[in-house]
Length: 123
Length: 279
Image (tube, rainbow over all chains, first blue to last red; front, side, top):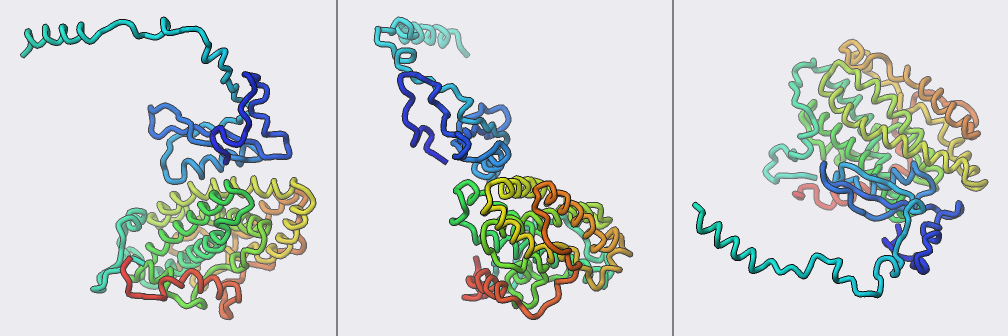
């Protein structure tokens, strides 16, 4: 296993062709594992395993994230298949973006007034 | 050990849950004894291999395999636990006493699991040969007319199928990962092959089990299938072992092997400190 973002150097300025390059044939590939705790839950990132092929990756995912019956479903994904997107220009642009946030509408007073009205009609 | 100091039956709910209720008097006494004998051979195979393989905990070649192999070893001990519990029902004994309370020479495991851990290739090859044998033995037992056994076996098989897939994958790794691992795998197979059929050792009172429909036929009738399946797979990997399996004998003891004497000492060590302790 490696740390979730661990030993790998952070991608350089969003050049995601560097992401997932750990599997070069000589070194075991890294597989990211997602697990579902119960039916209907979202799949959440559980961690990762090192394995030389998809079969062993599946076995290791099962043993590390399912042997105690803590999962009903696992997704095992080669890290190289993941597009790593962390470019600040894309995700944290410098200009003020506060107008894109759903703030600015003060709801507190309106909500309080609405509650008072419904209480007045209520049971 | 699960104990009660007043000497009442020491049975834990979590164990009992896996063994279906049955009336021991459905079987006559000699058949019951023969069935207990069959179950103790299987349980001891699982138990002993489980303890051997758990010797890799902390030192397996990579972290993931360390966790996985230890988990497989625990599964085997878990299967043994269910079978010991079933024996306890049949004989009126206690599962923990059967598992941990016998002298080393009373264990009935086959010769295939009577080798030490040795190196990684050896443990993988032994485990693979055993899991293949176990899958064949379990598929025969799943058709048993003795329903409680067929039910328990059905549950065990669901885990064993996965074990065999895991070991198939590792055999392929060993065969394709360079000269050293091939040489070690080949040496291990040459050593183990002579014992490969011993999980199917014929039991003294097997005829009673066949007459009662508990077994479909003689156990050693399954050995050919095992040998053929193993040979086909190993040929595909170009890892054919030397010689031929020496037959299906090999549960007869004493003498106890040096390696098993060591293992027995390990797995009974805690219990022997205080046999009346409650856990």
